[in-house]
Image (cartoon, rainbow, N blue to C red; front, top):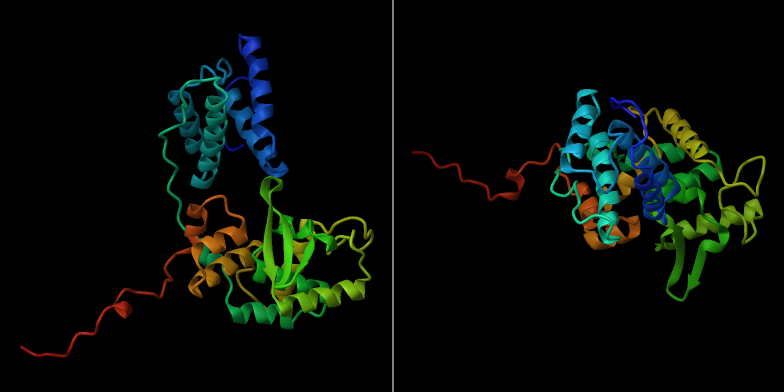
Length: 302
């Protein structure tokens, strides 16, 4: 972690330390594995910086000094917000469990971030060029699913053939999102046609992963392999800067909202926990000024 730490002496009250371990274990239940790993690292670093406190004795001053130390070390606003949000989540859980009366992180504001989402989107021409320059059926399908469905890379790797649900009004995909939460997203006819063709060519069974490892079909495709496929397609299309797979999620959200999709629909399809997350995509284009929305003045002379 990018933060100055003090000595890692054990707290004087070992009972409090044990109680914290039990509390933190309960707090992490239901969270995604990646979130668990990150949050545990933040909490461990916090208590290494303040070795003589526990959840019950932590104060706002402890949280503030911890964040200031990180800021002095050059931690970015996004990293500082991660620290704050992890601590706030733990303390909020402790309040609900009646282990503490007040949340010491309550009232502390997130660090202001520069919205760079618009800089991490693609236009249709760039996506079409990536597809045009890609001959491999798997990679073409990957790109189209990332774009049309706005999936996270980890969600793509989890898709089983059995996750597609057939209904009278169309096909749905059960997406395994963050925290093992399941959401459903519709698959349009064109995309479904590509998926069924791929399933047939690959001779996939219902229990198989849609995208599997090249050498071992029972093993899902790694996130690195998807990253590499996207970068290879972008390189062939001569894109600059080089996008990551997550750019397709940004692009899907941005273009959907610009195309008139209701924000609550975008929120549900992307699996956002709150509308505030989806609202970051409601940004202004660099070339979009207010004058185009205002009535034009006549050319009168004095």
